[in-house]
Image (cartoon, protein in one colour):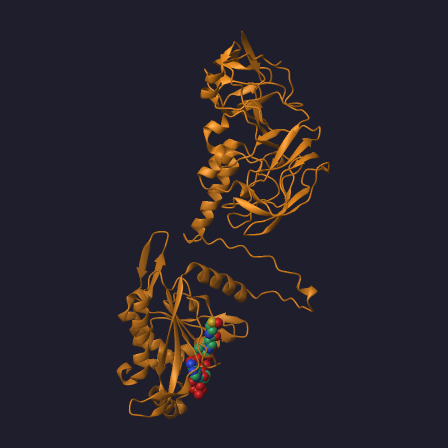
Length: 551
Ligand code: CAO
């Protein structure tokens, strides 16, 4: 006998729904409660279970259709069906408990009245929801409910520990706990049944919770109901507004249709991080696409570095003692942003060496004494500026920048050197332009003038731009070694620490007191190899040790 299966009542004021997936085909044999359709209303996405049994002779809807409540979905022939055919065609169990489809040669099925409501009081399984990318299981620390408890949506029912955090798992179902299937000390797998609940008499629209097996179409066709009610309240309180660095939403399974989840998984998007725009935070296909687009944009903004750092929230320091707050100066803000970017986006390596500047210092001091009257002072930094220009000529990759988006290296044929200046309001790096065309004295004069301007807040924007390489000399203040941060988009920086007298073996049986200058060369390992960095630094050391060659 031919029986029609019509779209049943879906709830108050819901007259139609969009067909998101059709889970059966013509010729299939369906049984009662087997999911045959996935539909989306403006309230939720639900799987529609069959209320008829038999072989499908006519399938009258397809994905994308809008179906009205009461419209015929399919027609079945509910005659006698050979059991083996059922098994081979649908591979299913008759219900969600234990009873397999009977093994007698023939089973007679009767159609259930089409008017049967989707919304009913029933026992539902609560599964351990998805906990985040690559988290498949967690240790159960505490089970917070027991049989007989009446629980509410969002009530914590379990305390679990993953390798990332300790989490309270909230229920996504309200009702009376009839079975607890887990205990402290157990390892719970995502998708595993935790408790069984006699659901409260609410319009608990059902959704299928995903696990790995669900990706398989065969399982999707299964009549075995793996369903949990979607929380009827607001979406979990941890709002997923940030991108990939945010923790997943842990309060309940992300509300999304299985088809949406599957696409998210296929394109590598963690569904738990997608902000849902639908009612109660329901995640649509468009939400997944928008999130994925934003994710790619944020990667692109990071220059292809994937840099997407979110600040951690600070503790309340007043709990530990008295505090005072001041606003960051603009220089401090810019320095913080710039250095954070450089530090996170450039793979830094720092190479150390020491230069014997005994002779150089003797000569420098003598020259300064001779030139005392002119007021021109030759400084260690000015000498280093001159040496670095020669080194940049010898090693052009140190005078370059990298364009990661275009995968290009930009070599500069001009020589502008930045010198870090310590000021009362923060670090400033004025740039001495075209150093290769200037004498040591000119460099010295210009550098002192720029440092003075920087300290008196008179520095212009032009004085701060166009640098190729930076020198940071902290030796006037002290210190042995430090690891300077490359001043992006440059690719290397020389850190200079305090020159000091040290005993050096002269090769003839005696330690001699020599003035050694500690040098630290930080470089961008994407473009500069370690061997080149040593050669570059050796070049600088040798130039400092043989000042006559420099002249
Ligand atoms: N080792 C030992 N003594 C050093 C030295 C070193 N590495 N560098 C400088 N000195 C000495 C100088 O010889 C000078 O002594 P004399 O007066 O006897 O000659 C004295 O320290 C002061 O030097 P200076 O500061 O006048 O001149 P400079 O060219 O060496 O330095 C400048 C100029 C602008 C680099 C420096 O004033 C400065 O601001 N340094 C701090 C840079 C900085 O903050 N870097 C940090 C960046 S990361 O946070």
